[in-house]
Structure formats: C-alpha cells, structure tokens
Length: 231
Image 1 (tube, helix red, strand yellow):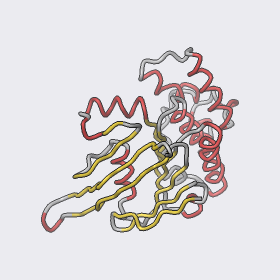
Image 2 (cartoon, rainbow, N blue to C red):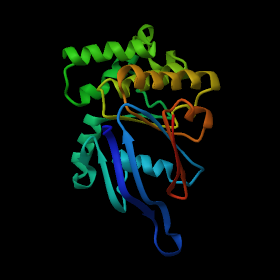
Image 3 (cartoon, rainbow, N blue to C red):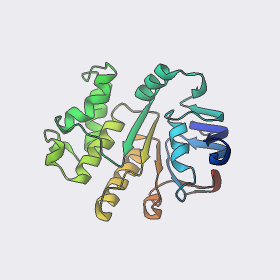
C-alpha cells in the first residue's frame, strides 16, 4: 500500500448560522500519497483553500477527521498544532513572506532556528546544500529580498519550506504574483523537489497551466471532490 502523507474522512467545514450558513466542505474523503505533487483546483468558493487550511491545521473542521504524517489533528490543542506545523509542515504562499532585513540564507534557515535546531547538524547542513542547489539559488544567498527578482524570492521561499524536510509542503497559489515565464520556472522547481528530494507537495491553484506540473489533480466543486486525475 502506498504511504500516505495525509488523509481525510467525512471532512466537513461550515461557516455562519441560519441564513448565512455556508457549507465550504461537504464530507470529503481524500488520500494524499507521499512523494507526489498534488494540485487542488476548483472555482472560487469551491472549498479548495478551506481544504488546504484544514489539512494544514490552520482551520478546524466542523466534523470528520484529518490525519497528517500519521497524526490525527483533532486531538491537538493550539500549542501542539503550532509545534506540529513547525516540525512537520512547510508553507509557500502567493506573497513570498520573506523578512526584508535578512539575507536569502538567513530567511531559509529561519524555520530551523525557530525550532531550536543547530544548522551544523550534518543531515540539516546537507539538506540545505541539496535544496539550494536544486533551486539554483546558490549565488543569491547573501542577497536580501529587495535585491532579488520575484522568481528568485519565491525560490528562496520554497527553499525555506523544504529545508527541514517536512512531511508535506503546502503551496497556496505560489505563482499568483509571477509572470508566466517565472511561474513555469517556479513550478518546475516544485516538481524537481518531488522528483529529486522525495518531497510531498500539495498546491492550491486556479490555473490549469500550473496544475499540469502535478502528478495528481483534484477538482473541487461545491465543497465536494468532483474528479481526481492521476498522471
């Protein structure tokens, strides 16, 4: 059986009450295999971002279960969820979210410092070199965000998400602020991280072109899985 990076069973999420009640997710059963690039697509309001937020422990489901890296999230309080995200998950956002006063290298190392890990750990140092080389940013490590292009900044953000070898990297519209050529480069780097680093990537996107880089494409409609296509 394929190892699962995450799974949901009977996942529902509702907002509001009475006349304002909205069912964002309606009983979603989903298995996400480890070591694959999965794109989650759907029109605005389909529930794709809500699904990602529930998978990442950023939002609490109304009912159902979410299991990530073998851990059921429902039993974790806020502090435990924060630690879980820090230790097991990586995030890449549409806004690069780099700290402007830090160099690229310092931004990449930030999650490990927050976790209290020593960057001199052999496995961590090797992972840093591997990630930086895979993303082609070795020559930019001493530069601050303002000295880099948007594509370079997003590659630094991806490196920051990958450096701790998380169970899953969640990418929320990661090419939304990039032109088409740079978007293609960034998506290719995400694909390489799966192929060459064994990373699991789950990407929310509304762009069909972006989804073509994925191994699996899940389409949501009205809070339910309408289709799933595997490459």
